[in-house]
Amino acid sequence: MVIEAPGNPRHAAVPVSRATLGTPEASRVRPRPAPPPRQGEDRGELAWATVDLGAIAANTRWLASRAAPAGLMAVVKANGFGHGLVPVATTALGAGATWLGVARLGEGLALRTAGLTAPILAWLPDPAWLGPAIRAAIDVSASSTDDLERIAAASSRQCRPQVHLKLDTGLHRAGATADAWPSVVDAAAHLERRGRIHVRGVWSHLSHGDVLGDPQNAGQQAALTEGVEVARAHGLAPELTHLANTGGVQQLGAAGCSMARVGAGLYGIDPLAGEAGGERLRAAMTLSTRVIGVRQVAAGEGVGYGHAWRAPRQTRLALVPLGYADGIPRSAGGRAQILVAGTRVPVVGRVSMDQAVLDVGDLRVRQDDPVTVFSDGSDGAPTLLDWAAWAGTIPHEILTGIGPRVVRHLVGDAR
Ligand SMILES: *Cc1c(COP(=O)(O)O)cnc(C)c1O
Image 1 (cartoon, helix red, strand yellow):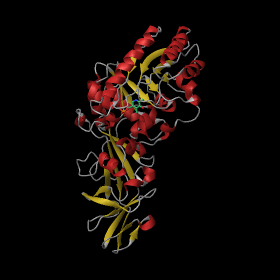
Image 2 (spheres, rainbow, N blue to C red):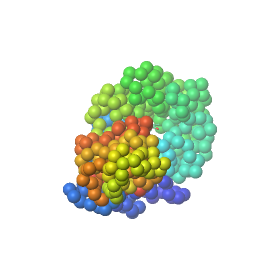
Image 3 (cartoon, rainbow, N blue to C red):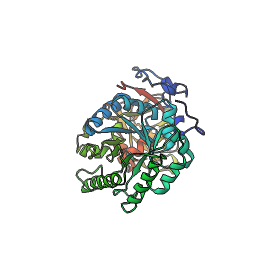
Image 4 (cartoon, protein in one colour):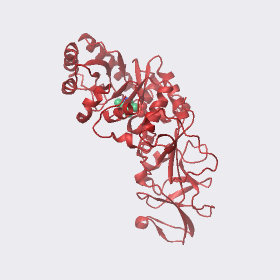
């Protein structure tokens, strides 16, 4: 399917492995993973993220089994949490996901442009993309009668928008409030009877999916069930209901719904930190770079902007070409560690936009040596969780912050 879209949705332009998906033409075909880099093979790149599609497939299968018999929507927003929109979507669909979920309509259009025909839901409103998205058979979300009117205005005889009505069951971010819900479902039923829209789903989002046993989850599940009953009483017959995210699926399955929407878990993030079987999830990304220079400094020399760090002794410093524009959090400077020559060494001084400095002491480190920023930890490198702790954030923010200068290499068996 080729979509006429005004301009290029941003995520269509994020580079992935040159070997597989580097050109727009190539991104229309089913991605084939590049062969894993052979021992000692050097592609000469400054920084690369190795994305293990086998891990994403295994994570999808496990999450799908937790959600079963309900379906599984693979949430691939924000460039598949930084792993690559189309490769993640294709892999998840091949491993048991039944739907794709994105935040923005443009992300959905990028999936259609790449040739994916699976059902897609995009939940943020975006007037500029509404018409093209509806013509591209992307389902949209409505939280209010205003949303419904805009969506209905974009419908045509050939193309009836598929709508998922969102109920606010407690997150208080989007969704109709309980008070407004009867008027929203009434307006939707009216538009549906006139053939202007079809209400395919009713949905909501958990505020405490990542907190084991929190009573808020059961409360939101009950509120959604009640909301669906109100919708049915107004003459709607939604085929789909969905509430649970990754943490929700881990502890509640699909939470009484016909589908669950999972993002984090696909990529190996366990929001429940091992409290509900999440140790089965495998980290999908390894971030690597190389040393681009080595120098010696005398005791007392200041290093980097503001001399935020001074060498406590004569030492050797290795420079790596990754900075905060590439997703190395500036706030992790002075705390973080990186694996070089099989040893963890500290990141010293301020992380700058494009570069960071490592104190390698007496280690035998030379220009071009490979450096592992994070991995699944099996090689001794820091993990994503380590980086999240050093930066005072969650792994999601580290992953989605990996910038477009980092080449993505796809490896592993996507089945
Ligand atoms: C991001 C998102 C998800 C996925 O949540 P995870 O916790 O990453 O599984 C599901 N639903 C909505 C509405 C989201 O914005």
